[in-house]
Image 1 (tube, helix red, strand yellow):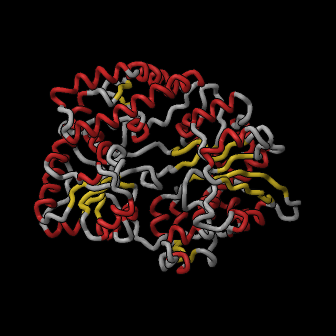
Image 2 (image 1 turned 180 degrees about the horizontal axis):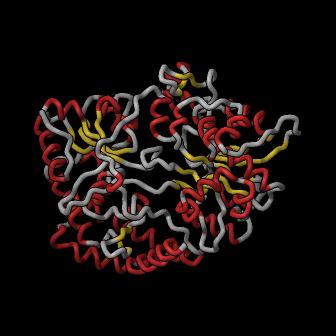
Image 3 (image 1 turned 60 degrees about the vertical axis):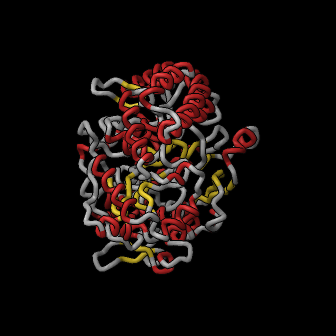
Length: 514
């Protein structure tokens, strides 16, 4: 992103577009048009969309009025929604890739690739500069059925998960931030030994697989496909062949490492015992958490940024150092136009604005003098009303603008530096992030054919359930890795692991060929 984006861009978008080369529309004097959008409901934490400052302003700017239908528990009502009167488009709703392909093929969702080329110059420019974005959105039938939610900066938004370690404890014990898996084990042991009330690694139940385990997997060479690939139980080996992680010998070593942490009391047993977020945060507030993982330190509480130092990569025993990060496209179901839309081009033009630099700033920061001011260095910072909001500045901004909470809207996230400054924080400079630490392949959630999706639905569920149960048994010592690993691998084959690999390889080959 251009450095000039650190400074104010006026909400005179026609002039700004002429200066920047981005395309926006001058709607002065034109008759207001109406579109109907359905979205998930966030009114428990902010005003209705129709009352939100951002959407009222954008109606004035665009000449397009939105009739919003906000739906609670959208995921549970999908079938009912599809059987009734469809909106013109779905906005920020939870359709899966498989559903997008299925309903696109049935004609409920319309193809967008030709419309994008003609009516969405900002998104089209991103496609040209970042071809993998377009590849990720393209279904097996060659069509694009949805606009993306994305972050082009690897450090922005929720792309990169990292470990956070208690810096005051390190200082107290004269320890450096660990950079290898063995150093991490040594530091956690020192934490626990220094005070019996202290926990080493500690997260709410259910978070180990998506955090600590995958950070260790990346250090053991199993993160070469990126974060989404690890979630899909795959990686790319040294011969550029796709493999499963869950039956690989390196996975056995990962679980052995985690078993040692658990056996030595360096992983909190509460992380396996049903502890919820509130209990975990309460313990953290009493300074009991030595290590946790998330995309930012605020997750643990307002004291997080001052207390915890990030660890983006760990070096494993074979020299692997890989960021636990995902592709630019975090979600492909952000804006889906239906067959009932009378003017698809109008809808696309309306949404395309949020892929421009002006639209990015407007949707996240709002307008100078209203929602943000410029600091002494000319950087955009939210006004005090937002920064001092009783439930925190993120929800404070959410009372005005939409693209600060929930994610998965049609949008390209601002660089993390701008986002940090907006909340009154100095940008974090990560000294352990280098280009060579990026995953060799940044694989998305592959688009499946209908046939693949039908077969995968049962196989994936059976395998995931078995792996989750097995992880707990191996890490807690109920099963012995030396004695029970072969039986575990054999059971994986019985529930379809080899067929899963075959399908994933088909999808990988298709993605790489596009």
